[in-house]
Length: 89
Image 1 (spheres, rainbow, N blue to C red):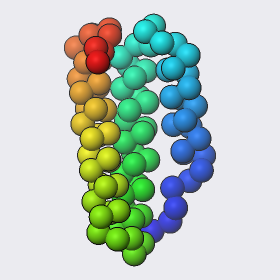
Image 2: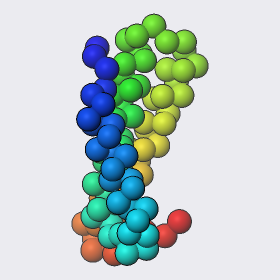
Image 3: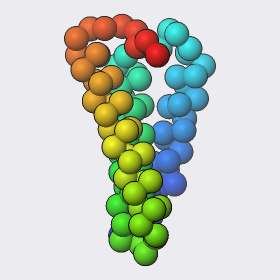
Image 4: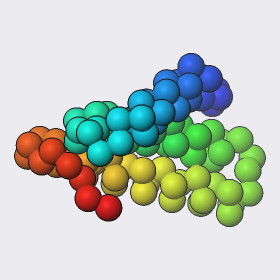
């Protein structure tokens, strides 16, 4: 298993910065795209840890973070598909 490319992590961080700058004006489609990209990075990190000799606790923590991120991404994608324009906390 190879490391998550730095460019992929940088792209997620850049999206996060754009969403932060947009504030409440950020739409659900942009939020869903960011959350999907974030989930993909966290899933790759979890897979790396599973195959890289990390402790069971670290592997579990990474997998749980990835699962939470994927759930958030799926929820945001559903909201965007339903034309919901704003996600509430």
